[in-house]
Figure 1: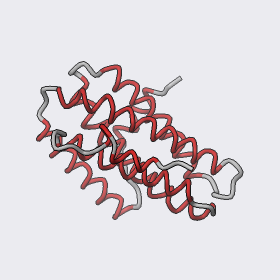
Figure 2: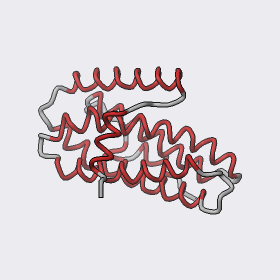
Figure 3: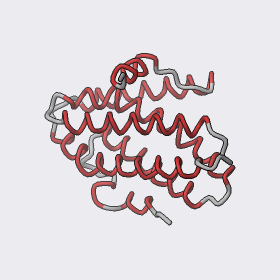
Length: 183
């Protein structure tokens, strides 16, 4: 059984005083992801996995939105193009699996397998961001205060919309993702 949450206290996964607020915010969410993946892996009954997975899907939607709409564009011009492009592809795969899982019944034979793969991909992705992207981002000459403010406003909007409608609408981002993934 995994214990990914232990990583939250190790190396670059820890929130450091040297981390600008946007990086610290994203790392705190990474901590939540590792904990949720551990909880899913530890759950023995499908309905328990599904309840935890619902929290994971909601956090994932918000987290990806903050990264793709605000954080990634702010640092992309600072020499992090390859890391960001890889992050976008990983986000697309996470979105795909998350949508499949949300549409499935938890008793489906592949439900646990898909959820396990999503967890592994997610942990791989956030570990890379902590170990590589965020270290480089800290060196970038960007206005981290403005990024933090924009992320806070956007997150507040997403939460308010979720409370109101039960969904987080991201039409512009959805259009970008569709265009990026057109075959």
